[in-house]
Amino acid sequence: MAGTNKASQQKPEEEGGGVRWYFSRKEIEENSPSRRDGIDLKKETFLRKSYCTFLRDLGVKLKVPQLTISTAIIFCHRFFLRQSHSKHDRMIIATACIFLAGKVEESPRPLKDVILVSYEIIHKKDPQAVKRIKQDEKVYEAQKRIILLAEFSVLGTLGFDLNVLNPYKPLVQAMKKFKVGHNSFVQVAWNFVNDGLHTSLCLQFKPQHIAAGAIFLAAKFLKVKLPSSSGEKFWWQEYFDVTPRQLEEVSNQMLELYEHSREPQQPSLQASEASGTPPPGAVGQSPQPQRLKLDKNRLKAQIEKRRKSQPDVSRKPDVIDDDDLIERVLEDGIELAAESESKAKPT
Image (cartoon, rainbow, N blue to C red):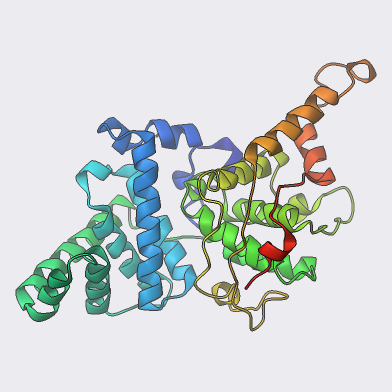
């Protein structure tokens, strides 16, 4: 993957990996090592989601912060950006990633705990296998060697670049500035960020762009009016430095997650744990899953309808480009279909 996604470039000296970890969606989906080894896009997407789910479950059982789980997932995404699924066991690589992420995010767990819990999840349908690794030292030592070799492989593949910036910090910072008095707003936006980890968004866009997309979708779902910014800048420009086109692309890719599954995953921990600072409206609350019924086609149809409704007689061709159109749509608001308010309330 020689090129980078110009829409989400960072300067090389920037923290979080810089331009080396940012690519276009087309590059990621068409030129991956797995694709060259005969694994199609549908299969690779399934494999990506499966190791993300595995890391979430592993992180919860190990009682690590959500930030550590997120970093482990990003490590895994970056690994398989350069390595093929056909040559590596994704669960072994994921186990090594969470062990490594624990050290990076200062929430380390003993290697033995990581190995045993991981093995238990992997072999959950085989109770005898779980007993063997706990009772037979040779089985444990063999698994230990496998995980340590995988950790070395991850480090080498990442070029020992362990700098990761997660979307949680810009999300929480923006929430504090918005001062939106809606109890579910932080929870829903947080869910969108968590679910977005199951995609390749972190390989395409900066973390603040992902946070902006999550806030935008949460606001539209809950019909929350975000405060207008001072001057000529809109909220997404002032707080996130994101273009309308980037915001639209991030939001659309997040919506794709719910084409087959309508309910975002429940965050395992409170939003405050990622930044150390409680966001407004989330103190003492455990985020609950929100039932969403999002229609991406409807969203796109409304954008296209507005595009066609622009009167040609009042302007010269191309005076209003796609970015201008998207910006108007974002500012005016697009209603997303939601279930009745009674069903959507946290239980």
